[in-house]
Length: 607
Image: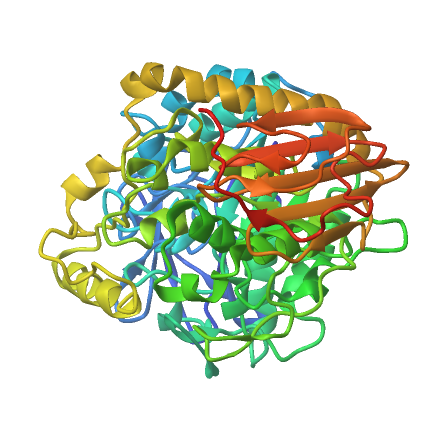
């Protein structure tokens, strides 16, 4: 398949057409392997040159009137990093899986990974070696942290500046296609994280020749992208085409849009809705899934049509449920965790209704947060107990399993993997990896110094960032520490098998019911000690009772119905510490006039 996009080079049979949108410059040249060609100014700020001598594999740059050489902002590959020349890429590829259409959303179990840290080699090709492990576990989708070309040798990916070019540290574009193809061979979807709220601090030349920013809007990274000012049509098209590019050229199955709360746009339609509509029109016959990170908990972006299909976005990472899980498992109450002290009720509400904060005031933010979400189906929410942010936003980048009870981790895993929401694991979680995942970047001497300071300032309300032994985010040693140690996986074999059993139960018992999941399907009971939630899924009832404390709790549990899963110890009138019980169909765990007010009891269960 060959490119046919507005942005980036267009490779023809006997020539290549080079294009650059540079309305702030009156003349440009394109330099190809040391030779230069004048570009013709076009309407609306475009400059074009057709070069018969150019061939795939050639390196090229654009030359501004002052002599500055810049890469193509829609470069398909940067073999020499963000300041180097762009390479002409022929995207023809022999796909082994020819008729892949993706998987329905209800079948998805996500596994988030960072390509550079997932394996020792840190490449697209080395990641293929681990796909059999993920398939055997029951993973049906991998979500790659951002791939867009970033400055330096290592980065989380959120400092990308060339959004069409997979970073060369991971391999070539054809290597990424091989990874996607190999995943599809195993029935595994591939999602990629994309960043449309800012550009990184080094290597973004766009402002020197195009109105890419809008001073009316601010973001945590400076001026907002120009989605609604003069020249915004081209900025909007740049990111919309980028989304379609990843899904079309690389056959990705979905996108995760980073921090959309930081995307400011006063026009109608909002860029997010136009992007989603454009993507769905471009791929009407494929299962394409669009995922949000949205600190504002805006349920409008998750709205469904009368047939229950997403109008715009498929689902959102639900940080609320993570925070409540975290407080229950660890007892930590610093920072934003202080707003989730009532974790029993908060977990119940997050499972039954989606967001914990649906317009209430959140103390950490100092203002209200969220909008009503109970009317959305459970699958509009992605639940998890770890992700790159929640590990990396700790001073040491430590995982929960490194210092907290494995029984607590297993109990929470049983809840989120068997709920009607879509579950997501973070790489290595399934076998209890203890390797940290601290923030890391390589921005050059001056910017590295600013990155160290900015990191401390950004997370100053969280403990440990001023500690002398806190890892330096710009050190290669910090990046190396984040790499999974697959040699340790054998030690976590029992936990891996536990995760596998839960995912088998999900696939066999819960997934078939999820097409029937509608809004207002979940009901939860408020209580400090127990989590109790019931969902109506068509003609079936799925019910949860969980004790996420270290004490046994009195509870009346009817025996009718089918027991789907239990962990820990349980009787007809009490439930042991860190115990989870799931039931399916006719009322199991649905307290029919029994003791609706659980009380702590001194009796302790056996291990």
